[in-house]
Length: 175
Image 1 (cartoon, rainbow, N blue to C red):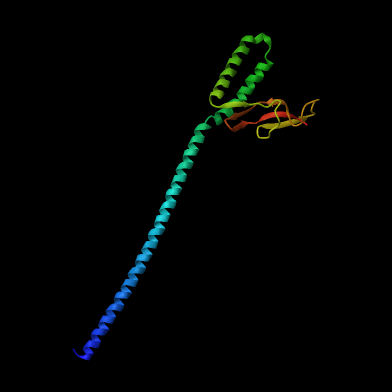
Image 2: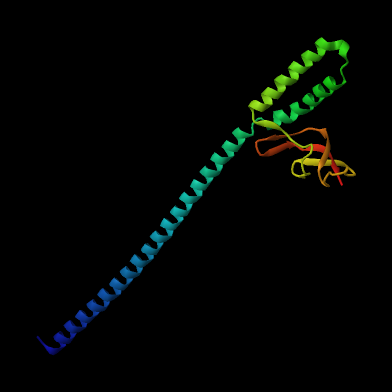
C-alpha cells in the first residue's frame, strides 16, 4: 500500500469514528429527550388520576349531603302551616272541642313526620342568646336574678335539620 492510500484509509477511518460519535451523541440526546417526555407524561397521568379521585370524592360527598338534607325544602314549606295550626289551638274556644282534637291530631302527625326526617325544634326559652339559632326581635330588661343575654320569650319556634338551621327562633332577649 502506498503512503497516499494509507493516509486516505486513515482519514476514512477517522471520518467513520467522527460520524459514529456524532450518531451516538444524537441518539443519546434523542433518548434523553424521550425519557424526559415519558416522565412528563407519567407526571401528568398521576395528576389527572388524582384529580379524578378528588372529583369522585366530591360527588360522593355532595350526593350524601343531598340525601341527608332532602327534606329541607319541604320542611321550610310545612313550618308556617304548623305555626298556624298551633295558633289555631291556642285561640280555640272550648265549644269546638272536636275541631280542637282534630287540629291537634294533624299537628301531631306533622311533628312525627318532621321528627322521622331529622327535623327538630330549637330549644330557645331560657337559653343564652345565640345568633346562629336565634333571631332577636326585641330586648327587655332582665328581672331580678336573671342574667343578661338570655332568651326571655319565643315568638316563633326555630327548627333545624341535623346541624343546619332551617328557621331561626324569633325571640326576645334580656338586657
